[in-house]
Image 1 (cartoon, rainbow, N blue to C red):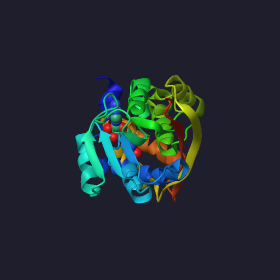
Image 2: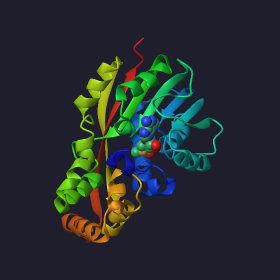
Image 3: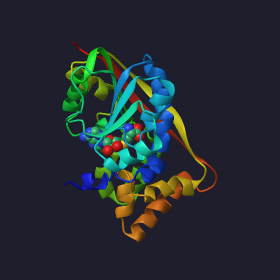
Length: 267
Ligand SMILES: C[S@@+](CC[C@H](N)C(=O)[O-])C[C@H]1O[C@@H](n2cnc3c(N)ncnc32)[C@H](O)[C@@H]1O
């Protein structure tokens, strides 16, 4: 297992919620407004995590059904407990093999997942397999290379100033395909048609510096995983560097921007 994979500790649902899930819920609403899907659709969600997008689909899109999948049983338990809706079914699965028949879904979506998947083209092919003819396939990822997920970008910039070795773990460097052109290229390679790619942006507001820092100490996700792996003095130096950069007085406001792609089944 690589160092990065070890740090990608997607396990504790509550910790994920504090670090990312609350922002996932914000972007899910904006994403669905842009996607504008029809009602009564059969959905498959890939990498549902703690259910941020699942819950938003149920609340806003009047689906017939949703099969929500994730490799993490801990995340699925969190999602099942939070979402008691008979239209939703949760199953352990990864992008390698979705537990669904060919051409069985009207809409296949994935939120903030594809950058964590080693073989993205195979993942898109599998998502494509389960789409009905004329079905809609859509996904979004943070604009890591453009510094578009501001709180993570600030973290890695400070981490690299304190220790240049941290640069290799910076998600902006690890996920270079997360740009408009990068998404267009993988979608073209996957043979998707009628492609549309747009940025989705909002502001993440932390009431004060401690509220900004605390989620990084919970260990869930690449940056928090790195944070908790540090010796105490190193972590204190990182915290001090971030406090210098962001300031300790008053709220911290940072951009959150994702690139979202939607396309139709190619045949
Ligand atoms: C940043 S979280 C996003 C979770 C959720 N979609 C959201 O919007 O909050 C990334 C998710 O990808 C899942 N994941 C990682 N590798 C995966 C794979 N190969 N196939 C499917 N999901 C995967 C993780 O378990 C985690 O739930």
